[in-house]
Image (cartoon, rainbow, N blue to C red; front, top):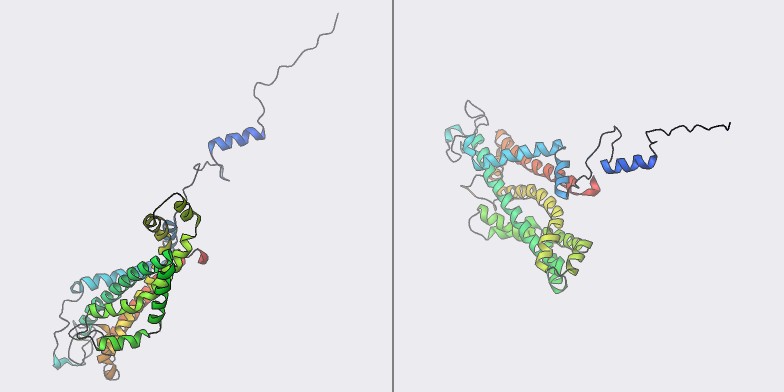
Length: 323
């Protein structure tokens, strides 16, 4: 009889190949080392969300932010923590030290130093904010247009900026404010805007020139986008970062400049309440009553330090080279 050969049936479960595994993994999405599936595509963070993510991990940002928030609150509502009148003085209490209800003592005129220190935040913070906003808006507008259009507009702006850069800001303040009657927040802020815009203008010009050379701007231009659309939609959002950094740091500088001008007698003038005015009045009595100088000078130093710390944190978050 012929010999029959039995054939063994093939296995019912086919073997899994490496290609099958890869195809399955691709269909199900990428797999993490732990074996858990992740979303198919992570959304890329924008510059601003990435900056906020970096700021939210910096203790310096929270410390400076809380200090600035406190200063803004007492500048708007000083009566919330100081119930007295900063202009109410009693000569019988001249240069007295701290007493019950008056923790900072009294100045030469018998005014409560604590109340004047609290109310002094209003003038200093107001000058700093108004000056910074004015400088940022004017400088960004002029510098951005010069960087975008170039040509004669850029040349004229550059020469004008050189003229203003040649004027020492402190000397210019002494001369300018000496001929202006009445030292108010408006006049001091106007002076700082007048001499402060060239710095922001140069930064805005450079940022716009860099942004308009990017591929997405060239693509928008090739598709027929108008100048206004390219400026507002494509260039401005990507040129704001360096302007914000410089403006944040400059705010503290303008506050200290206001105090310096008031100390010299050409800035804010009585009956305005300012840290610079109080420091000027206390400088002659530093040996007899050091408390008159300590508190307004300390408040000024803490305020300037808070804005500088905030500016440094914002700079580190917005500058990818520092991260």
